[in-house]
Image (cartoon, rainbow, N blue to C red):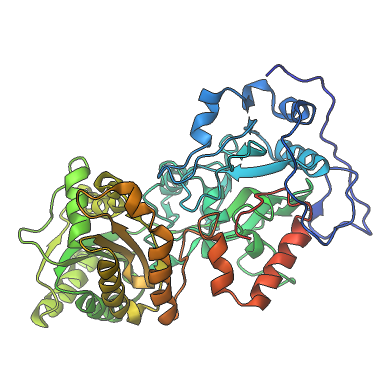
Length: 517
């Protein structure tokens, strides 16, 4: 697409003090009153509406070639593939602001996208070719690292791995840990309230964010990059954007919490007979280690076999197979006296007592950083390798921690009855009750026929989840995949409040229409 005439310039007009909300800067003019209803999706955008967007970011960052746009139009599991007339790659928050102001004023629809690692389709445009992808990857500066204040200010396009590396350089830790951290971006992590393997000790992404800079659908900017640990001044607006999946605003920067980097850390790979034994081991480990217990992941034998079969360099850590496994991690911010490793001593005590109690069949303790990473590689790769085994029906659910064994027993029996010879692969964060209850197709079965039962199996598994007082989306979000299920698990009052919030922030339905709600 040729560069358009310079017919649109981002404006920087301050709102009158009497009308501008506190901590909000108006960067565009002509903002109308908020209508009550959500506007329907408009027909295919005309080139005259798209040309000003090209002018904002420049032709090099306005992609129109199908080959260039392809990576932005499908998610890695191939569940969603869309079409778009344009992929925009802004490099500043001012460009994001100008894009949204133009889109909101002209009826264009914008789909924000980070590293495109989401699992519920919220970051992929639909197949109407009417939604414009807004990729935040060029907003990738680490603006400030405050080691003394234990904070870091980063832009939305920074990869999670880059943030880990920057924290490590000043002997600090940013604890959010995901299998996709080499490619996922912090803006998307925040927008989806990502979970990961460190929630047990540090909480979800929501617990790791101190401040946000957000561009609203009409182009105004919420200036909230404050690193305060205490700020009790009215509604905590940032929490509305965290987990909103790009439906209320576009996150362009954040102030993150940092923690002391562990001085001692030990990882054990443990074989057990049942999830009930895993729960008892967790209870004992939590009582013994307290905050030093930083990881406790549950895996079935079949999941380990998938990882060993398909992950490069992977091998079974134990000599004899067990029906279930736990990956347990202990971390300490201090080193022991006289060279003693406090986490190793505690890990050996916990496992020794559990072995004597008949809870542990076998265990391997990592003897090096590389071996600990190899243990974690088996766990982090468990979702990825399932596609090598054919169709996989996914469930990202949570139940109270004490209910995990009973839930697994009932859900496994139910899906095996529904689809004989299917292979349940439930794994995940035992320590916080979040289980990825995935089900792989029977060996040799027709993949399409198996996946055609997705909704039927979802209904079965989610019914059991709700019976135990759980959630149908523990950490992946709602997006498009679970949008139609939301009304079945939320009360009418909750749904009404969510719709009112969406209408207040985005009355023209400019951002991520059809996602979440």
